[in-house]
Amino acid sequence: MKAEKTNRKRILIISYLFAPSTKIGGMRASKVAKYMAKKGYKVDVITTTEVERCGSLPNYIDNGFFLGTEAGDVPYMKARIPADGHEMKYQQEQKVQAHRNHRQLLLAIRYARRNLLLLKCCRCFFKNFKALMQSGLIQIEDYDVVFTTFPPMASVYCGIWLKKQKKIQWICDFRDPMVTYGLIWPLRLYYSHMQKKACRLADVITVVSNGYADRIYHGKKEKKLYIIPNGYDKEEFIEGKSPHEGFSFTYVGALYEGRRDFSVVFRVLSQMVHERILEKSDIQVHY
Image (cartoon, rainbow, N blue to C red; front, side, top):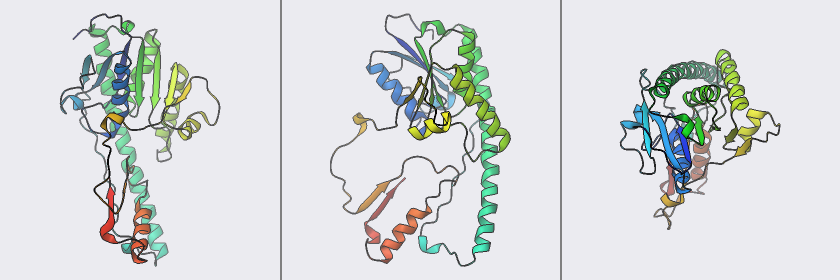
């Protein structure tokens, strides 16, 4: 549907994931859209058909456009985490180290495969995005700003293309740095090139933490860089006392195919139970 002209400021959000999808990758863009709408902006979104299958877009979105990725869903590997710290044995250190090295190699291969598959999906998304731009359904000149969020690379492809083809104001958001230590070197070089290109062309760069800013700009000061930390939506926060009286904590985020090792927490909890600091029945872990 072609958007009607309005005196309200307009923002176009390009995000691979978006509400009503509950995947963590869509949360930041969805909340940006929600609160930009509350500020009086007219918000349109371009996302994937995967989001469309999840249900209707939120009512704060004026127009939604869904692009196929053709390659299908990208497989995510579930990390295996030991349930009890006592089960982990360290007597045979050499065998343990060999097992770790083998496991790390397998994780690196799977991580590289996932990235390659995801890049293929992103290129399909970008191809369909250009077709959408040429269809006339969207007049990009009508928007005051375009907001993209990484990862994955799909929205960055779109932002770079728009910046080169049209005179737009582009906010390039990084939920994660593009260049990570787990990438094999060809992908690392490619992502490094794309990160530099996006940072050079974008009018504004937003990141979630000072640490991410340092990784992207290597400690250099950049006037167009802004830190916007992740938080929580007060309207979705239920106040009151927790029904659980024991020791409970919640982990939010991803385990990154096992590269973020959570087992140390379970070892500490197990030790606390062994030393009778905590009762096993009082512990609750939410993920």
